Amino acid sequence: MSPPDTADVQAMAGRLADDLRGRGLLGDERWARALAEVPRDLFAPMSAWAKPDRWNETGYPIDIATDSAAWWEAVYSDAAIIIQSDDGDTDPAAGKGQSSSSVSAPGVVFPFLELLAPHKGDRILEIGTGSGWTASLLSWWAGADNVTSIEVDPAVAAGAAANIEAAGFTPHLVVGDGLKGCPERAPFDRVHVTAGVADIPAAWIEQTRPGGVIVLPWQPGGATGHKLRLTVIDDSTAVGSFHGRANYMMVRSQRSDHVWNSHHSEDAETSATRLHPRTVVTADLGAHLAGVALAPGVDWLVISEPDGYSLLLQEMGNPEGSWAACDAVPGADDFQVTQYGSRRLWDEVADAYLKWVSWGSPSADRFGLTVEAKGNRLWLNRPDGMWWPLP
Image (tube, rainbow, N blue to C red; front, side):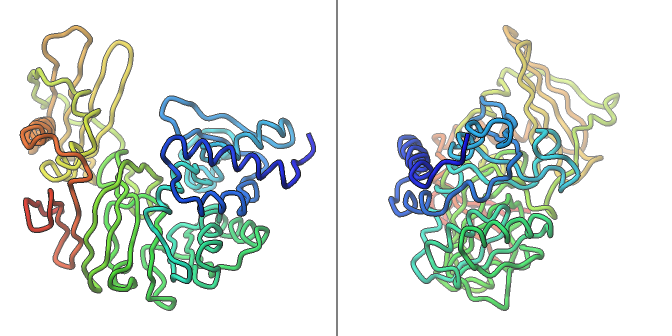
């Protein structure tokens, strides 16, 4: 198959925009124009791994040399295109290892860009250049001179620079630690973060104007993350709200290499519960935020199989810390709980879930986060209402 002409590419972009609109993931028609005028194919490798942005769909290899039609179809679909795995140690086209950089799925990108809500001429800081696609979209929107994008991986940064040049944009590109921001280009009106963050760096707030906006995937524990939109008040304070689920690759310095380890299992205690662990896991995101508030510092791992369902819990950052497992067998009246350590993690998480139910099961959009120099606070309904300090 010969490469599609410009009209064909724009038609593919149009069909993708229609799909995103139909699923409520694209509301501003200006971003639909950007999707057509900043061709996504310029940022995708010739051979890669495509991962659809749907939990029940598996990834698949794409290669323009062996199946050009499938490559173009994947690039103009709601799929992430993996461009690096295991920080460059694994071939990303093999679909193995841990993905460490990608052309993010459009259904993830555009809701965040709409949440960012930049204006023409805004000075924008992007954390995580990746393929360069979102830096180019922001350049199209606000003007390339106003965009600064930081990438920690030199090889990824070099690829992004080539992609961005091919797309015809000239933002300011930096190779370095995005958690430090870019003070020489500050102050910024908008900060766009493309990697999961558990601890929000003070530098981002310091380098953003009062009234400026920071959007990020906030992932305080496990695989569950939240779209967070912060508005800056002063150089150390920002207040924000949650806008749905967001699961991203974590920034490298905040990754957890803590794998599940039921250490000291001979000293663990067993008990029974009637609360199905799936009920806790599949509840509204508000239940997860209640868990962050009332059972902080807990990492979750779910194992779902035809013959059982398990929720594994462990203390974040402490491989010798407390852990718990709640195992549910189909048809059982009660489910087994095994716990070890100074904290009873299942009891904490279960109590947090039931407390959330007693509050009327508030949705995640009723929670918010205040970031201050003296510490962060998660709150319900209003910043000066019911709140909890975060570690």
